[in-house]
Length: 479
Image 1: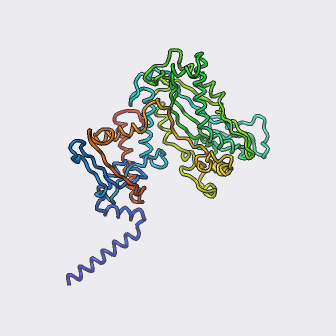
Image 2: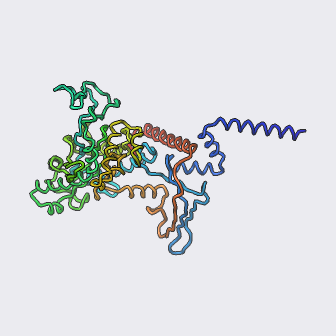
Image 3: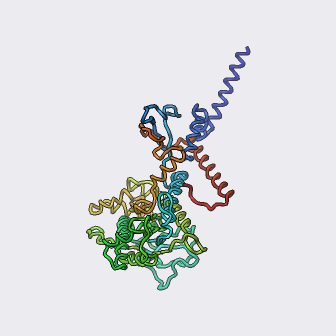
């Protein structure tokens, strides 16, 4: 009798649990599954180690470290003992819209990379702080009138009337920064979408020619040949690309003058910040990239926009000067952004239908459509416009630098790994041989795992903020 009652109670309890599970969402069911897994605690430890990465990459394999002299095994690791037989590692995506934890770490690396080129450190001598340095902003030209924010009216009508398409040529409204109209053309039919995306496709070459033109202007100002210039000084830089609200890229760059051997030597006394500013101003006004004539789109000559800002960088600020720390933090902030932060897409498009249904503004959709149409022309196949339609034709890296500006991302990541493991930079003790084999086995989270990872990332962000407030240090990216 007792056994019958016990079995009945057990059945009712099981039915109650099943009924409760039926009312759970898929995410909640996955959370229950994860919590019941035998390796859940180890999985949590792995997720914390990746900083709550939103899209971890899973690897399977092993590493064996042996003593070079004795042949004894110093360290052995195999993913066979890990949950699922795999090890998660960071995705290292720089975009905050894709993975905030990895984006923050990448921004921290960028901060130290740029800062090292301004004040020294990370293998760069401290004497670079005495070299002439400018913070330069180069913009794209106008491709048509767009709405703009500001305390004044957007585009007051001076001549009045309408454009040839029957739309007003001005806008008397005052737009706030949050207004969705900012960056959109006053008349989409007047806007030159082809020039916009083709300028993006040639922006990298325009920058390269500008660098060469700056060196040429410096040589001319010094009364020497371009060949002799390399015996006197070197131009180093680090630049980041940022999308404006109108969908056009502009560049923020740190430009520095070094001696002939790079940051280890000072530039000659005649090479100062004023001379560098004059050279940049002359070069940006004169340089252009011509696209050969094609029957489909004609001929283009691509130049920089009229707005060119230059500011000297100071070691210490007086309230108005731009400082080393401020510039490094500014560049680091923008390296985590993408077109997605301006309402665009962070992933490639593979057909015209995807563009038509993309959750973007009509203006960005028209730019993507222009990339898709122009990318089908045989004369423009080398520009790969269809492959870069999601970036509006711009295919350059977010951040680029000259070889001797400062350290590299690879060196910074190796130093961080060495610090975390307490070993040398290659990840193993001295005088050893390392044998390893890894293979990709997957990526991403299940719904429940994504919730837990997001919570871990949020907790870490709160801890950073508490630490910052308690120590009174200014906010800047981690590294």
